Length: 340
Image (tube, rainbow, N blue to C red; front, top):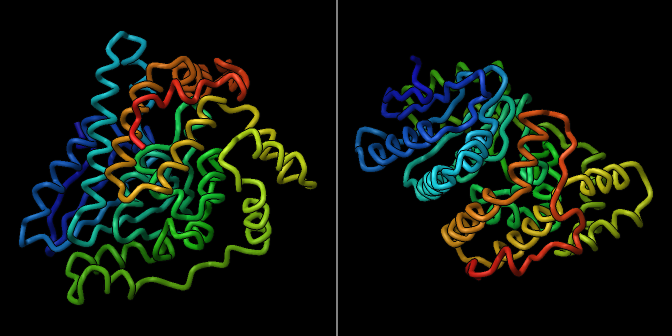
């Protein structure tokens, strides 16, 4: 059986290749453990000057965590397995953020959810013209995790709320403009970059910068949307966000409101709450601790099982959320005992 995470040290660089292409590299517990083990070994190894994370899939970098497996564990009466996965995944996110050497992610294709957790906390995030970013957890009755309550508010709270609540997709230009990505390298030049990184005579970061090209323009449409996002997502109450969207003319506001109205009301509230707390937090570790406590509760809730069923299992796209309305969500009950 092929390794789900291939590991190699070449030219002083530790290379990790995600190799679960049939599932778009959705992260399993085995993959998380393999990555964590490699980083633990390489962190203090003087022969390893940095880490390169890449994908063997031509379609995706990483489509997130294996939420179907988490749902199955809960339905089988073993929610502790889901708890263990989230604990290990979030610990890996923290390890990446603390990693003392250059950590380079080559993002060519789709990166969602947990895929951002293993890339955006690293020091160098290279994107090609095929990169697509998204945090779509509210669509499945969950919330943006893997440290999103830390990194999304730091894009600016209105934009962070928009991305976290809607799961909107960002192309390479928009990801670079808002700071989720750091460098743009055309896809056709990736083989040359990877080869140069095998013997990075000038250092890992300098080698990446030598291959980097000017970022493609995000465009006027994005500039106009940023203005709308700033107005409509300025409030931490999802009910007010829907009201502001309803007051705006135009197709973008109308479609955004329609989509939000179809997502889990509980997820929308918890996302707003976590992003608000994350904006006031002093470090990522606090945010990950908060997310872990809430993940354990939400994974056991009705909306997570129903959302994964509707989107990924039966694929009927008709989830039945409980409760059905934003004014029925007990936010205080969900967040009781969750720190700060």
